[in-house]
Image (cartoon, rainbow over all chains, first blue to last red; front, side):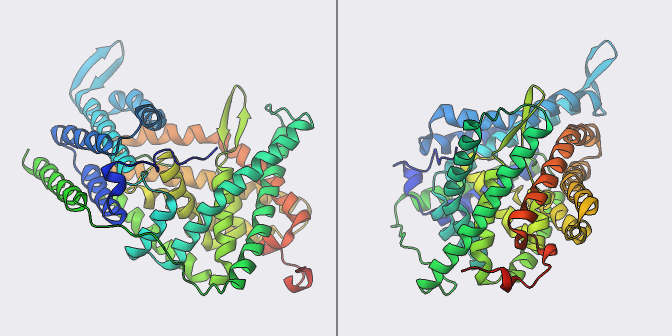
Length: 250
Length: 210
């Protein structure tokens, strides 16, 4: 149900300091999101693909993840060219696709691919536990980080719990169809999930208190300075500057 | 329900980020360290609930349940939804860094609204409770769809048709979320009433069994 597909790897990117990766992903994402020069965005896609290669991401799962973003893109490609004002590009019967509309669709598609690929290469290549501690190092409030880490820790447990409830329902011949009984059953399953989550939370909280929890989590992760740290940092900053320049003067 | 990367303008992304930060700050302020475990594990339950697919005709949809979460948590829905979205981003790459703020607002702002608008009737009996639970579940989806459409519309006025289509798609989801929230609230009232903050009839200590 839940797996961290890209988190385990031995590539150069996996060994780079996670704080640097998060910062680099943030810089690159915002740069790519805020420019709308087609040439610059093509460069952004190429750079993101380069990052994916450097992280040695498996191609098929990455493709699946990008395809998941395709639903809304498809809607945009169908609707936007026909409704966007501008010079007609193609006329079929009463429908006219505008040049500006098609250009905007292209821009959105390139941005989606560039940002999601870079995010996968830089951030999805760490376990969420690492991300949590990294966010703490970067100044995110401790409470939010702890909430995130607990959510991560128990997501697998709760998912397991849900599968157990669903299996029990199936044993009793529950077959989901479109009727009120199905929705009622799912509502009770989810309700039970929330009840069990809450009871587990109470036990976890008591256990944390027993271990002297005082509002701090400690991280045992450490990252050595590798040659990749300055290299990745420099590459991302340089590409962001080039993209911005292309946007303004391209 | 979320907007993917690459659609929104700088102004919308930044205002979304600002609003999400403000809401999260309020939510965190109202959570003390003794409630962190509750909030964190409810965030995982919310995350898992978003993986539950229910059939609708030949297709199926996944649950959102931000209305239910709002009824349970109030302002704490902001940090909880933010954490759940981060889990989704890292596990499945649904959305990334730039849209995190906007997507948090899309789901959490309706949750907080529902908490204050529909919550007070949850403690009543009979049809008032049922009606407010349905309205909470369905209303949270309506509001979320409207906020999402507004984010698209403020990016570019010509996104109107896309935004309207996205809202229209959410009409069946709205009904299903309303029905599921209704049954879920009824279930929680029977099984663990202290989970619903508006429902505390007796002081909670008398129910506590340690």
